Image (cartoon, rainbow, N blue to C red; front, side, top):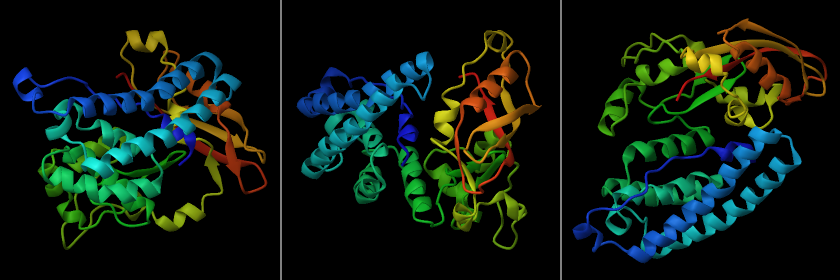
Length: 308
């Protein structure tokens, strides 16, 4: 996984049960897991601040990202040692509010570690120690990482203006599985990417073939964004005018990627105004790509402007 992709900052509410139930918890283990989680977040927060001040390609940001990489290795080692000793530290050991902290650290680990501990976390979710709606993301991530069909439809492939859904096993029953673990219907989930989706029946799939991602495409894409979409989106600074007017949506930017992977000839094809168009162009002008074509490559890219 590219190190910039690991900069996603998960937000977890940290708290305690009532005094009566807290007496049954492993307070020493709670303190240790919180310490690991804080270490997991420390450089991620610092890196985001440095990137806002100096840019993602600055020496300050790069230095913090290297430290984050080292911290992830240490945090993974510490949390897997706890899992190996106690099993998954879920709500009966550390309380409901802390039950996802170990999971968050595993999310930032390498693919091999995710695959190794997925069965352990699945058993924990079956016992009610971990929320299934969280585990579903990791299940689908591991599946798609192995070129297998996902289960809950949480994973999408995005490149430029193209957003596609990874194939789903037993797709006709996907909403039944999602509802069972507390996830909204897939058609609702996909609306945020402007994807019009209908759940297929056993006899017919009403969705166009182009809605789905083919694993063979991984080798076919000659131009790829360095760092991934999450890191690119994190560079967006919401214009004050857009905030005041509650403007949100997607901006489509047309550009040419030269043979060295640098953008040029940027223009907004579909904008939002209120300073968002200019910000989209700024962000895309700083993006860098790998270009295997050896020549200029025209493409379109979509950037989300969403008020959180």
